[in-house]
Amino acid sequence: MSARKPPQISSRKLPQQARSSGLVAAILEAAIQVLAKEGAARFTTARVAERAGVSVGSVYQYFPNKAAILFRLQTEEWRRTAETLSRILEDHKKPPLERLRVLVHTFIKSECEEADMRVALNDAAPLYRDAPEAREAKASVTLTMEGFMREAAPDASDAARALAGDLVLTTLGVVGHDFSASPRSAAEIKAYSTALADMFCAYISSLGSSGSSAAKKSKPRRQRAA
Image (cartoon, rainbow, N blue to C red):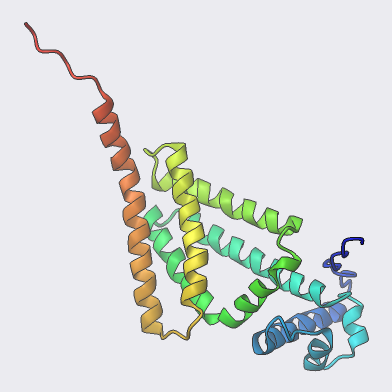
């Protein structure tokens, strides 16, 4: 028995004119609304077309199936996340740890505001988890974090900085997803973000000092003069 062929997830064609671009934008906006309301399990091309006020055939001109629409939404989400991370962490007008605080507050707030769509996209993730775009997005985010960690913890080892950067990104993703699963007030979001940022900043601040302490301990003691 042959393996099931994965669905096509690339767009059928790119819009060449303003009118076509407007149609694609309307389809994607309708897809976001359907996804947030119905979830990934009930997400269909027909529902998207109905919400956008166009025929199913018009949708198929640009997207061969619902997987392609979901993939486009996820690709846009990856791009926005990478751009936000880069914009905040590469803002050299602010001290590194202040940038990290801004990132945490921005990310957690965004997770809560777009929770329904993010949960639905996560449900559909098996369709495109291994796509080249996913690897590229992750590589871009990792590169930005590596540059930031060199500024934030210049005295730490490469291994310590790499671990810290991965810990920040992984924790933000997992904790943000779980925290946003329930409705949150603005006060709750602020308090939670502040606490999470405090933990990150304390951890990163300790990297240089712990490295210095280790270096001091490793120095051989001078022998007393006879």
